Image (tube, rainbow, N blue to C red; front, side, top):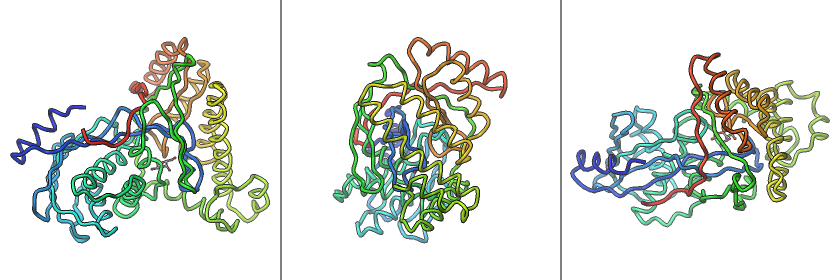
Length: 378
Ligand code: GLA
């Protein structure tokens, strides 16, 4: 992360020093599309993050510069001041959601940049929201507790960006801890850190970015959520969480094929997350890997959020004897996450790169996973 570039840009634009804040993107070992169903997720923050320099400017206006886009935006703090630039809505939304909760902030100047790949399923937008939520809370001494900061990011997605996401990404970005995954129960909001060091067992975690841009805004993501809500309400529940396959079968006739398959995926995924946690405690990484494959094919065939490029990467992983591999995040493009034995790693990366490039004309980007800390002031 280039703190110097950001600090210099801040000085050049505003003639002052800004305070530096950062918040990371995330991986998710398993537990996809379970968060908005009140289920479990198992993410960890990574060493790819958003970085911002920020300073209150004593006015009621926000001036923010997106270094990676070479573009600025200026807006006020009231509801009618929503900026035209989509990226600026993430910052604006955070300001609004803080104020809607009864806290008072003023205008500020900011510059931000990041190395979380966009549209890769690594939560670049949550990293941006969390950076600003954390920073504004700190700069104005608001005393908002960390869970609420995550909720502010999530509400920003809902109310200003059009994505009805769950809480996983913002939660992981704020609460991440180096060397640990965190299992979050999205119904009770209880969470537990699990030390995670694949190398201890002779494995590596790696992401392969297909570079197929996933775009959750205006995507069928929201439709998936609606399917789940329809099935849950038919079962007389708030969430799909806790539903058994038998219960689902019992109402199958009253569901559309599509809703049924989506719900079936979610029910299976809930069991898989819990099994992966047990497998980790037993040091059984092969079982973790098997569950990852099951998740992938469930997401592809039942939940229908994969794409041919990602299915292809997972097939290559299977053929290479990789322990586990699956699409990661919301879907519709982005990365696979793979659990690979050390001795297979080089061969897998070479094979995946060559075969993918031969078919799609570009190589997937290899992103080694380093599990890192969550939001902080630098
Ligand atoms: C996106 C959303 C999350 C979660 C995942 C799928 O990343 O922002 O809330 O639903 O998709 O697990």
